[in-house]
Image 1 (cartoon, rainbow, N blue to C red):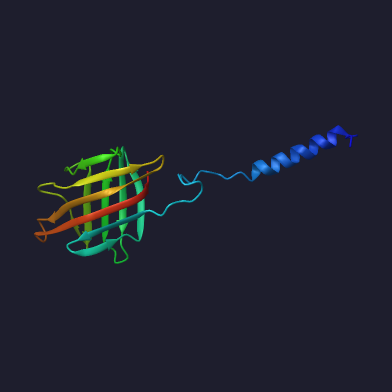
Image 2: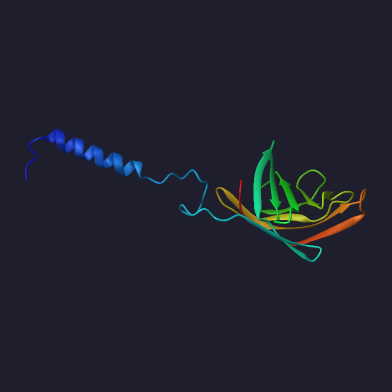
Length: 157
């Protein structure tokens, strides 16, 4: 069949191409899994009690990545880290740090920071790994919380 009106063929082809391009998936959701956005998680054992975050909020402060992980009971575990390279990062007074807020009392690594954050996987947009530390509140309670078996997965950065 000969096309008698080539401009109609051109208009039809242009319309089909426009429709197909407008249906192209927008990949602005920072995923590495072909459109499936992974669920961010964090779990830990804090003084023998399980901690599971129900919400994880990421923000930045200068070069520091801040992850505020809140459990359903209101307890908050906050991890701050600037170096997102794969490997072990020893806890220091400044970077990286872990704090724990429970019952309105803040616990941190002072006076003697210990523990680590280990990044085991890093993709274009996400990190996963583990952490362990002890946090203290010397001034108010004199109490120490041991944070063990900490694990985070699919954290966006």
